[in-house]
Image (tube, rainbow, N blue to C red; front, side, top):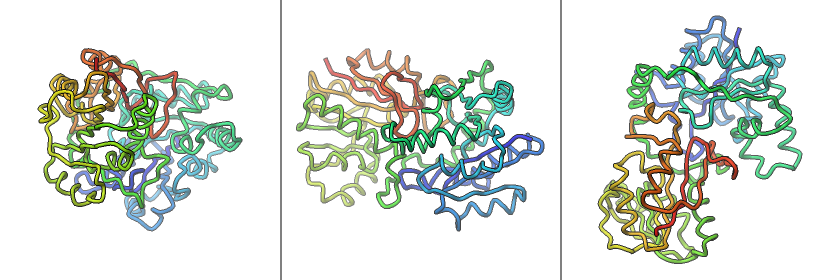
Length: 402
């Protein structure tokens, strides 16, 4: 028997609806993830873990489809404690943890990673940090997570709460643990990827997430963290005033974070309806001007902005037109800050709304043609990153116009 822990939630860290609750052919995405486990692993023991706030919600309906499914609701803001509680009964047996959106996982790869962990008695085995996340899992020993929780409670770790959300990254770096990265030798099946992309068109009918202040959990919200890091970088360069372009601003949550801090902000987006909504919703932010703009053909004159920010955009557009336009409107010596998914298998882009996802080398080679890169941050997940390691699931590049 193989133990599986499937992490699910009804809402994202930003407070919007979690994609795993959207339906594929009449059933939520999490249903198909669980079904794939039961269909392909004999006598699988499947535990669904979810926040306490979901205890009376839609996830309970899964029990009507899977009578052996165990559901554990606990600890709204700590997946680590949630998993520890859910795996107490496993007698320290290894388990596979996967996300509820991983409904097209590679069965053979999951078997391989589990055997690697079991045979060598590893505390954790995981895929590379920049491997396409929707095809990954980790294998843990429950005792390793209990020890990691004790370390987080010891006071020696800065910002321990972010590691409660994604414990694997710190666990892989600590000398107390015996861990291993698993690098697949076989290519992902292109038919599986195409099927996943087609299904994701139903799940991610809108990639643009709302950021809800009353429901978001800041310790795990990567969307707004891009802007926290941007402001930190600008302050390090002495940029405490000036003209800021936030292009592909979406709902304007990033511009709102920068509002009231002595900047003149232009929040621009291609979506005219979204801009009209922002004008109403953020009318109280007098230092933000909202404009409809095409990032590949920006209407502003040369040398207009001190800093341009463009988060999660370049994967959607023609990159050279975009970077040329950004270079043109940024002042000489000004800065560009961009973020985008990092993907070590860029030809295996699974998000149907992305034209292309870049490996770290591809992205740095691309941006370096137009700007001088000064800093690279590889976000592992949520707010987790390490200064000595640029590999992650998301890249932020800080670059100077010269």
